Length: 263
Ligand code: KIV
Image (cartoon, rainbow, N blue to C red; front, side, top):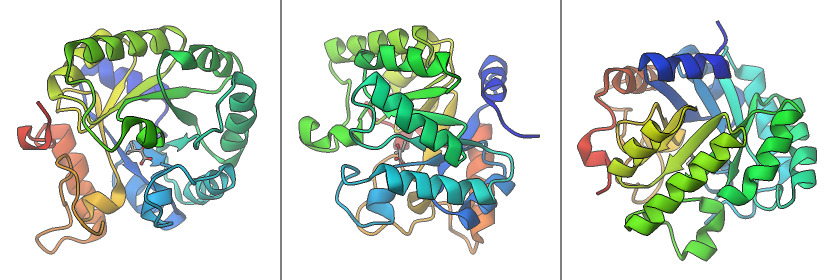
């Protein structure tokens, strides 16, 4: 059966963890969704992973539309979430126009980075039938403003503000909140504070779902990987066995371990 936003809501209620992996093409979308991944994220991380840029800032709407179409063609029933790229949602009207293009390309939900300034946009998209995931914490499109890829929300004031922003986005109709690179304790607080499903990456083990970048969890990303990454392509596993192991470890609570989280 296909995964929908209702599936994720039920999983949050029942306490069953759900899994998300990035996918950028048809073959990996097929393998990941057939291996039990619930959500395929057409992440703008493709700017770094596929295109070799040093940030996601250069990614365009054309790139995202193309890769969303590719993922849709291979998908076996996962929910497809597509990133809206840098500056494609600077105003609510611009967001609606560009989100519509991603939905027509095959997305079931769009993801936007930012805080409560997005509330009007989230409400508008929701009214027009477009589900939204709000991305908080480390928001890679703002790397130049943040001054690097760093853990966010370590100070109380920043952590409380993040919870307030997440609540405001959820109250405006955000269907999912994704949090990246925050202390594990804050990941737990946010998950408990929100009615909508929360997906974490480097946000501890208590979020409702987990996401990783596909190339990171296959251990093929060049250079040093982040603390929250685990290489599942070990012990002679095939790619589909590695993805199946990721799904099993998230569901059982084995991944992420305490060593993958931040204080
Ligand atoms: O673009 C992406 O892959 C993402 C994940 C890091 C969550 O947004």
